Length: 612
Image (cartoon, rainbow, N blue to C red; front, side, top):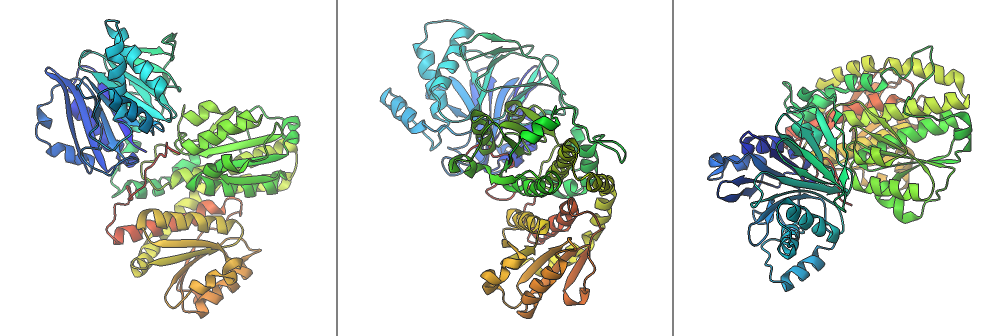
């Protein structure tokens, strides 16, 4: 949702904070601000709009403080405005706070604080936090840093909901306190300095050594040290974890946009995710898993739970697991999963997919599944993220940092990892051996075939220029191609703001065909030779009604029927969604560019959705 950055060290803080916010702007971009400790107390510089607006604020260049906190916002409470932007302060301007998350009981806390003489100047839930800290600070008779720690601890004990907090106090110019619950926060360890962020890429250029915070941990930071406490303020021993990501992955490297760069990084992301998990002549291996035949034979049902694009990857996983392993598999939207009373017991395996590993709905669904005795497996792109620490088992995609809000390489990496997981299960169960062996050979050809598919870019751009002004576009497919239609439709909505719908092609005549009229654009996906004739027949119905058609296929068809056909390499249907989605990613990208839109930061969306 929002992004937060902090710094405590010997350098001037403000340039580091703003640079960090720029790297985190994909998490929120309707307002931004920083607060530093200066010689005369706390300073605050903030405004609505993009992070770059901070450079225009009077006095921003005069800041000399070496301790500071920063925030870029994606509104949940209160419209985008200077008053609602972070950081927020208490009435006495003793504390500055930035917050990622939602305080669910803020109205109750606000009422309590007003009754105790506090005033509020914003519409946010966050403004209750510095005032609550101040309330407990003034009641505390201790002296020294313990007073600060206890005030933060007592305030956090009253908060219901989610939070990642950075807090500075004018009375303690050499310290900062950070804490979290259900919202991401990491600390990068430097030499005589510490960096804090809601996401690793924002500070990866400064350090590779990170402390990964757990829920309810409170950290007292100085320039040289990070002291960890639980909610009773008992000391916790915490070790750093080295992150191997390449810091240059967070740069555009000559591409116009992160999204385009990440589309073209998919051959590498797939190679890295396949890794050394198998060869043509060896069985699939996951060192992270200790599954055996008895364990898998006892599993009666698998749930794949995720949100948005990750859920669409789950649909490809369902196809592979059911067909290769013969285990009933359901795909659920995480936000609905908890509330439909799913049938979960100790014979259930629940797989949770989240690119960031911090998706609030998915984490909540995971906790529910564990409470019912299910085995839980997390799939994420972020090492040490909340979901991977909560699950019984975890697997990582190796897509590298994904900065654009609309997911591309993370999605295809999730698909391939799920298919490889299905192969692993099938080999343990000793079923479908011939199919599994042929599929492994196909998977090893994927990176080269992705590179070949990317060569269709100019054709896609030409078609996008013809249809970018349209108001409605439809996506059709059958079998695995319907899943790709869903993801293609979502991509188009996300970054072009064109209304689009996806349908199983066979359902067209059961209602949606009423929406087809002359010059409406319909996109068809056909990669399954068993279904291609049926899909062509369905598309003939829209052509008869005057629709323009774009076809993504690797099958032999009469191309003269359609306005444009994009041919992709032949590949097994289990992994064809990885190839067939690429022209649709490019299609969405080029339409958004034709419309002059911000491709990497679409309106109303943020990269990591850490609130429910």
